[in-house]
Image 1 (cartoon, rainbow, N blue to C red):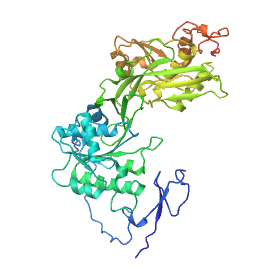
Image 2: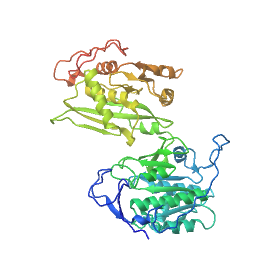
Image 3: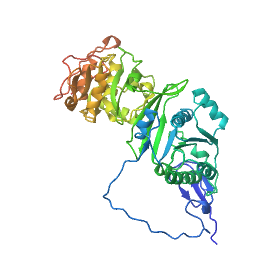
Length: 492
């Protein structure tokens, strides 16, 4: 009989080693390696009889295909992220920070499906049935025919779900608390999470039930456990939001049955999560009109155009190294925009602290926000308020030129719908302009935009004599007015 050789598995990345060590060679984390039985892994097993393979039918590449049947959840924002509803036999992984509202969203989803006549099961491994009932009563969902259970054994869960009518939706909250008899390790370990997920996926594919797995996240926002779980499931969704804001963003990171990078917007209220039908209007509801350092960015998340306010504050520093703080945007892109402003636009920011914030708690990931961020930074430095009826979008290159971005027509249409009169965008954006109601100001170089904003500044804030700024040669100018301010050098 083969000897039961233990293995050592990293609980952060899932790497397997033959001996214990303090630091994982794969991910570099310390004290994450735990000893686990090598004979109990899924697919392994000395002493298990070898199974003879069976032949299966090979299908040709050409043939008739049908779209997978979907089940609408009744929550429009959730259906948008999933691609139109839950596909039969699909397994979804939902991650998010503690207290962000994952359980609230899922209990609302199961209640909506149960009221529509579909069997919905909510299984909690972290809370008792009484705790789930208290949440349902607070949300006004106690009358929904949702089946509840507090269980952590995967084999017991599968045996219970196999009785009676096949459920259409099963919630497992959370996958880190589940354990299976096929694995001899503690619940929450990499091997247990992988083994329990495999058993649940097998049940979903055989029965046609849709399963949503709730996953914990680490301190850096990644879903805890082995990354192989994200490859095993059909879709990975992230529930994002700041505790100080009421907005919650449901983002699709992976979706085999729909588009990725799609988002759904919710608002946390006393009665649970409320869908936001027009996120742009909500994000701009508390704008600081007439204040310097604010610019409206016309962005696109998935297939949805969004208008958000980007806020910047540039203040003289008292430190040897100026601070660079950003919330809701990429720190590296902020550093790049600052470098372009100083190298090609003559904007001296070496003696200033820079703070950039995306209002509303939304996190922007596309490079089209470069132009709006640059406009907000220069507006704050020159004390020059930007036009309240203008939106900004465009990618800034390292040479200081403004490059075109995708889905220009959708951005302009959203801006026109919300009452904006003009858009500052790259030159090719004129082609996607609406017929009437919106003026397009094309900009080819960032230096011209800086010159136009600085010309409207308030030189009273400056202590030294202002210096004129000249536009870069060969770049189309937005205006003929000359800016003022001793923080701007001559543009060559």
